[in-house]
Amino acid sequence: PKKEQLTLPPDTAILIEARIKAGERNLQVKAIANLILHDPILTLEFLQYANSVMFGGASVTDVEGAVNRIGSDRMKALL
Image (cartoon, rainbow, N blue to C red; front, top):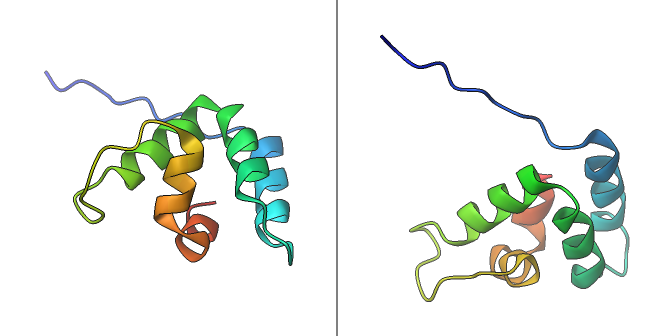
């Protein structure tokens, strides 16, 4: 029998706040990374994406490093 996968959504309040911060003129990576850290789903998604084959290189183990590697345009798209 097939196992059903449970998909959990990110925390809406954190997601909204991160989107607002990402849209600010003076984008602050550390502030966005700190918000993402408050949501385990977003944290996992950003770390998985930053460590995907697309980016190669050494593994990223912290959210701030993941946000930096991904870049602002892709980060905004993920949010």
